[in-house]
Length: 265
Image 1 (cartoon, helix red, strand yellow):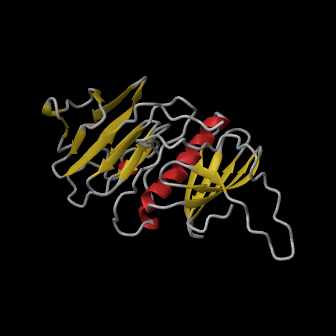
Image 2 (cartoon, rainbow, N blue to C red):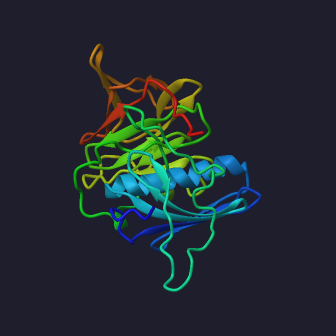
């Protein structure tokens, strides 16, 4: 199908190589993924596209060139990924790009009741100035069974936590080589959030946060326990519904679905 609800711009252009490395380009924002597990790379680039859709609050187009074929996909804020039939060139049949075949790892969420997830810093330059958050923010879609969580900041930013994340006002200025961690940028004009404020990630089934020595500290408010400050460097388990306090002015709600993300068969 060709979904008329998806504007023609921006397009997430993805190239995945046999060694698991990949390159993504969205409106001039280039990102490279190192060689590694092919399936995990597919999941990561899909998660990135979903993050773009979540930030824009609408579907986006994603074109992928992969060792197993080429696809034109529609990616939506709630984590759904669908095939888009390419429009045929006048006088020519539509190109055979693998559309409609089983995708090799560009996954489709089954729309869990609380969609969640994670990826890299959200692409502010593609978005309109802060609008309402999408009804269901999207899921990071790693291999089936992986836990994910959604962070919704009071600044209007969202982040989807599957792989480890470094959260802050400008984490790349402090951590130029994050390794396997994603960098989540919080648009804090008050500057009470540190450039690299906290680490958030999964340890087995537990989502944890660790303050990185932020100047204005990190705290958690939980309905059953009230507010408590975190000790620098000590991981603390987060639960669904927790409210994070980053510095003095920015808060963040934590949403964790009851079930891991499943994969369409």
